[in-house]
Structure formats: C-alpha cells, structure tokens
Image (cartoon, rainbow over all chains, first blue to last red; front, side, top):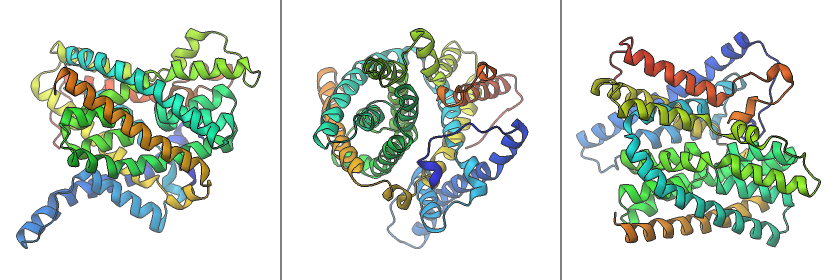
Length: 361
Length: 43
C-alpha cells in the first residue's frame, strides 16, 4: 500500500472533511479487528467440538492475518486508506489508557531497569547500523535513517529524523519500507523464539520492547506471547520512544555541523516538539490509578477500552503491510536492515538474559 | 509523532499533533469513565 511507505503530508483540507474521510477506514479497522476477536472465540470451540487439533490463535494474530490477506490479495481501496492510517492514533490512545493497569512505583522500577537497557540498546544499535551502512556503501543519510529506525522507534523516528537532517523522500521511503517489513517478520519470529527458549513473560516482554522497532509491532509481538508480556513490551517500547528527541537532536547537530542540514536553534523547544506526548499521558493515568482516582471497576473498564484501541491497531498493522509495494523499494536497504535487526535481536536477547541472571526473573 | 503535524507556518504554531490528540481523547475517556458516563465496557 502506497501510504505505508510515503511520508505523511499535511494537506489543506477542512477539519470536518478530514474527519469524514477517516470514517470508512476506521470502520474497516474495527470490522477486521472484531472479526479477529470472533475468530479467536469460535475457531477453537469449533475445532474442539469436531475433535480437531488446532493451535489456540489469539485475536492479535487473527486481526493481523486478516489485515495482511486483505492488503496483499485484494488491496485496500483508496476510500479506506486515510482511516486505516489512524491505527497509530488508536495505538497511542490505547497506551495512555493502559497506564491504568500500572502502579507508578512499578513503572519507575521497571522504567529504571529498562532505561539502562534502552540506553545500551540505542548506543549499540546506532553504532552497528552505521558500520553496516558504511560496509554496504549506503548513502550516509539513508544509513542515519535506518540506524534511528532500528535503534529508537521505527517509522516515527525515521519521519522525525528525515525532517531534522533534510534527508530525501526516497531515503525515508527506503528506510520505512525496510523497518515495516522487518517489523512484520519480527511479529512471527519473536514469539516462536521466546517459546523455544522458555522465556518468562517478563523477560520476553523486555525483549520485545527492546528488539522490535515499531511500537505497534512491539505491542503485538508482546501480546502474542501473553497479556503480561504485552504490557511490559509497551512499557519498555515507550521508554525507547521517550529517547527519540535526544537521538534526533544528536543527528540534527551532526548533519548541521557538516553543513548538510539546518542548524537547531532552541534545543529545549526541539526536544519538546519531538517528545512523544503519549508517554506523559500514560504516566498521568498511571499516577491517577495509583492514588485511587479510579475504583476497581473503572480500572477494568479503562483496561478494556485500551484493548479495543489495540484491536484497531493490530488490524491496521496487517492492513498497511503490502509486501509488493515494499519489494519495489529495492533490496540493499532490506539486506542491511535485516542483518542489523538479527544482530540487534540477538544483542537485546543476550542483554535481557544477562539482566535476568544478574537480578533474577 | 508530535512533529508530523507541527510543520508549517506561524498559523500552525498552536496546531496539536496526532500524539496530543490521542492523549486528549484518552484523558476525556478516562474522565467519562470516572464520572460514570461509561459504566462498563466489556471485552
């Protein structure tokens, strides 16, 4: 799907028309997501009633698979595309609501551990991707985009960096396509490896949050393992996302120093502009839940609303992934991205296992 | 993220990002749940 690999453009459309344009796609997200939920409930029951051996497939995977089938077999018609692109909006709203299921103390404790791991992961990933880009003779700005996409937070980081370092549209399309394709691959491989290694929910959640690039894919890869792993993956991934401003600022200063990007004026304003605001929303809801602003039933309702928002996101992950469009972007960035991702996944897995051995769990 | 809609001229200075809209929607929903407008949402 073209919209998956092109940089979003701000178009002069009246707000009311913009709102109306998203409705068909949002309804499609809801229909695909709900169909996934129905399939989860009914396929297992049907197979059991007919004495078939059938694996228990979660709604997360059904929703993604249905989306992938639609996108890659019939394609997503133009009328739905604007609405389908809102899956990231639902993801962020879902993450904020998910804050109700965390005690602030747990976040600070887990966030502290994950912050150290995230710092190590970001440094190692950027260094390795920069080396790979040079070894494969990729354009330097394309290498920067791939490095930021792998190290921090996928598509959002690439879009943020593209603007800050004045990279070409073509370079950002290459990088986004590579990160999306590898994210789709991670969705299916991470849970298999996690089960093979008998990782605990905590260890797997940490790994998915550290190793999977895009936030939607990280949430999905975590949820495919278990509910607890999904929660942790979102928390760790949000910690990674919070670092975006610093990494983009560093790249902007580096390229401005080479005279190939605009100089950054007010650095604090730059950091605030790039900072993912949903992290603040997540912390605020968690703070309110910790001090019993919501009663137990209300926390349950907020958690369920968060699941519904994620359902739309998972449908969107499948619907926006079109392998034919990605193939058009060329092979070399994919090869670099794939080698980088395998090494980063192995590196982060070793980190998580090492931390588990040091601190237990 | 934030920067996606914060590009443009001075007229766009106060335009909220997609990120901020998602936070506002989630906070509004939380408030509606807290005040009992949404009593129970099943999964």
